[in-house]
Length: 420
Image (cartoon, rainbow, N blue to C red; front, side, top):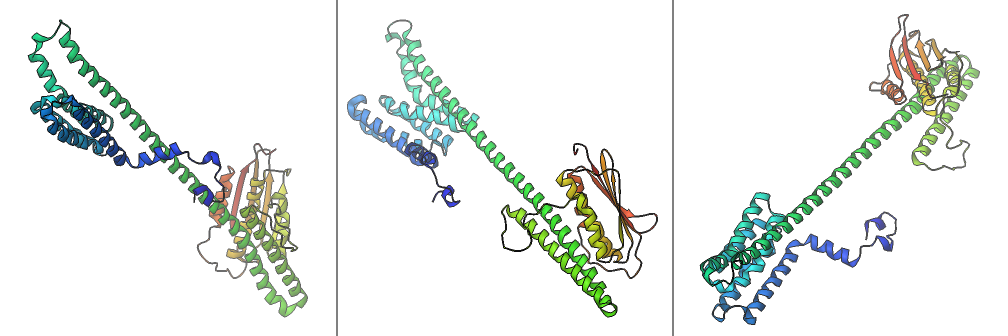
């Protein structure tokens, strides 16, 4: 089954490889088989020349043997070009020196191996092998021509006879060089494609890690705040149940409200991650908008109902800002108040301030220090890290630390340029 079909997409007729493309791919995957066929073809041509009388009758048996020997290394011309070229050069030289009449039998395989040595071998080794093949293929004819110069007609006969093999050798050299350049270019393109693919995978991995970090922050802010509020209200409800049953009922109602809101936040978060709607017929509306600066007052009121004495002060002129910046401000207030409940206790007076200017929103959260038993929260939280990461995504910063007048303070600064 094709890969596209496995992933649920039908392969169109235009995307299917043609018969020629399949044949070319098969040949590229099996170079030894293709070169073995070429070697067999060269053997056939050499045997045909021999049997047709282009080789003296006395040398025909030797020519048939040499035809097989000199063409056999062609099967390895791409996988082992240098050893195959050296073997062809030795066989061709032996044939030319000891059996001058069979030169035509070894010439064509020698030219093919010379081309292959230049195209597929190392540069210096290919050049050496090419020279050896050239000498092995033409050394005997050149010696014969030099010893019979007196019988050649005209003064240009000798340069012409020697020039033809040299021109042929030059053409083979140029062809091999062009093929070598094409092979190197193809390898470079493949390396580039592999590098680009690896880069793409790394980018996807970075995006996944960033998304995982974002999800972690959202889950931490939603769940940790809600559970801290529920725990604080439940602790207060234990004492209220003994003294004022009606107050205990109100605390239980607050716990139920906080739980429903947390459930709605989690459902909205899950829907956002799935990018699909949820319709379970419940009372909670899926996909509700993310909270922002306008919801800080409701958050403070909710925490105050849970028992934490917290006050909100707003200075400057509030205005609508980008969803990411607004959510960051809300989550920082939420996390800071959660930390007050966890680390200082529900009886700690706390102050929340939103300061609006033309270019910046400053959010301050400060508690006055524990006024009773200090809780012992579990270690290993990531709330402060999440605050800083959120602020950095929108060009802001978060500063945390002890306040000079006691307690703990958190300050968020968000630039508002371009938010108007």
